[in-house]
Structure formats: structure tokens, C-alpha cells
Image (cartoon, rainbow, N blue to C red; front, side, top):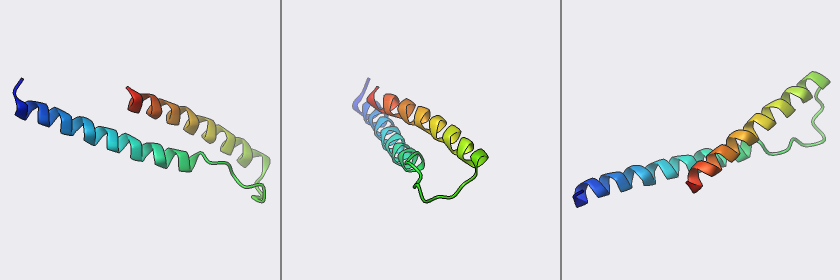
Length: 68
């Protein structure tokens, strides 16, 4: 493998890592806890809990991908 190919591969890996880290920051922002002063109904609360658990699972998946 020549140095040009190595540089291309390295730039793709670095770009993908930066993209994953940005997605990780966005996902952390989306899964932060909701304030107690938020007046929402029971169904909305259940929907929030469901979305939060899905978001946390995706967050862990992205963290694992970055570590790999």
C-alpha cells in the first residue's frame, strides 16, 4: 500500500470519527432529562420515556463505534 492510499484511508477514518463524535454530542443533548416543571400528560410522559430509552441505546451504540 502506497502512502497516498494510506493518507486517503486515514482521512476517511478521521472524518467518520469526527462525524460520529458530533452525532454523539447531539444524541446526548436529545437524551438529557426533562425538567420536573414540565407539565405533560401521562401518554406524553410514556412517549418521552420510550424515546429517551431508544436514544440512550443509540448513544451507547455510537460510543462503541467510536471506541472501535
